[in-house]
Structures are given as C-alpha cells and as structure tokens.
Image (cartoon, rainbow, N blue to C red; front, top):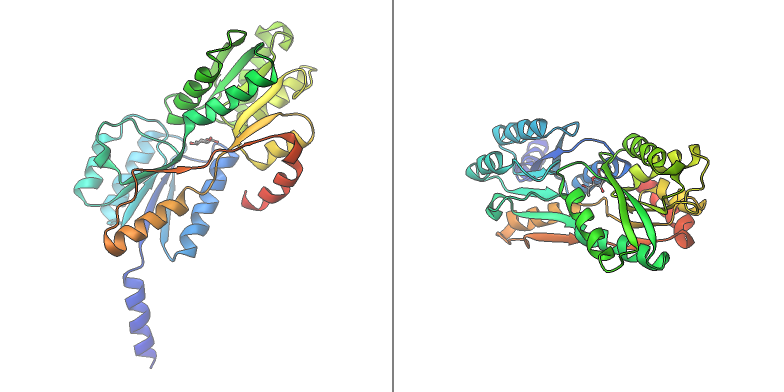
Length: 309
Ligand code: GYE
C-alpha cells in the first residue's frame, strides 16, 4: 500500500512546476512584500519557487536567469531592475523553451516574443493620478520637487512621464528639482535634505512627488528635521501604498498615495498554470489596478495592510 501511495505522490510531484524568480533586491517595503506574497502564492498552488536576490544589480539578475535556464526550470519570473539590456539572456530562455514573465517592471525590447506576459500596473497612469490630484489640491499653483525611482527603471521613466503629462496644462505647477533616490528610504531622505538646503530651507517647496512611498518616508524625516511640517508646509504624495505611508497619512504627515498591489506573482502563476495545462496564452500585459488613497481612510487601510507586509 505504501508503494502505491509513494507512486501516486511521485506522479503528482512529477507535474509539480518549478519557477525561478530573479528578484531585484529588497530596496523598499513594497519589494519585500512582493517577495513575501510570491512565496505564499506559489505555496498555495503547489509550485516550487526559487528566488534569487540581485541586490539591485542587473548583472546578478542575468547570472540568475542563466542559472535557472541551466537548471531547466519550467518558467522564469523577472522583475527587471532597469528597462534595457535583456534581449540576449531572454533569447537564451526562449531558445530553451522556458516561458518568461516580467513582474512589476517592463523592458523596452522591441521583441515582444522574449516574454510571455508582463504583470505590472499602468505606471504612466500612476503618475497622472498623482499629478491630477496635486493640480486640483493646489488650484494649479505649486513648486514641486520630485524623487525619482531607480535610474533607467520603467517605473521611474513612466511615473515621471505621467506626472508631467498631468501638470502640463497648469503652468503654475512646476517641477523645480528632480533627482533619483533609488527607491530607498535613505535615498529619499538624502535627496530631500539637498532640495531643502537648495530651496531656502524648504520654504520655496510646496510639495514633494515621490515615485514610491519609501523615498517619501525618508523625505518626511528630512522635512521634520528642517523644522517644517510634512503634509502641511510641504505636501507629500507618492505611490505603492505601504503600511508606513498609511500611518504617516493617519498622523497628518502625508497626503496621497496610489496603491500598487504586491501580488504580481499570483496572476503570473495562474497564467503559467493555464498555459501548461492546455496551451492557453495569457494577454501580453496583465494590468494590476491603481487606486489613490487619502488620510480619511488611512487608519483602516493601515490595519488592513499590516499583515500583507
Ligand atoms: O514602486 C518600488 C520598488 O518596480 C513598481 O520598485 C516597482 C517599484 C515600486 O522599489 O517600491
């Protein structure tokens, strides 16, 4: 009987999928949540997930992808740290007939056959949503400083593009300084300190638009250390929807954030399983929702999200 059970388990195990996930690193609270959710979503589906942390270096991601190909995984997930430089390694995955899914960031390759689908938010729209809110909130008059994400990453390029589109019709809303804080809290704090110093102790600054919540949380520290009130003297708007940003909003220290779902792996796993089952091809872009949140619901949202992060 044991042999029989052994056989059936082995049979189930045989079609157990293995996915190699080349993760950017753990630069932000959102990134850490994405990794945590990916592990639980894979477990839920009985998929073996091998995660490699690239410490935000593209060469480490390329090495990890090559290793996954050598291991003969069933699929590769990659969150591409920057948008360029992927064509050759993804062509190797294609030659090995290993489907690739892009998570939370895009690549700007012309050859769309290099990946099966990308699971990302509409990052241009995220910038537009923040920009539209700021124009309305300030009646079209505001000197904005911008904390950009990792240089060359699709979110940094797209969120800048969308925000600029949204403020284009209001000449009184101007980006007076813009620099990358590399999506980290320390980066956001350092860059905001330099902006404050350069802008009359921060008195010339009406708002900080940050490409993610973590840099904004660093900026809030810098604003307070300069003796100013974040959320009042300088408006704080960002993207991600991490718990600590909701906490800052509930304490009156921040004003708006556009939620980014940390569950990019779930939809990719479902698409992979459907493909493996009967060859169903997913849409090229599996788009996740973008919703703006404000202080009025921040306390409840903080409570709701704590367990996810
Ligand atoms: O907003 C940020 C992370 O790639 C869209 O990367 C993602 C971004 C996210 O560092 O927190």
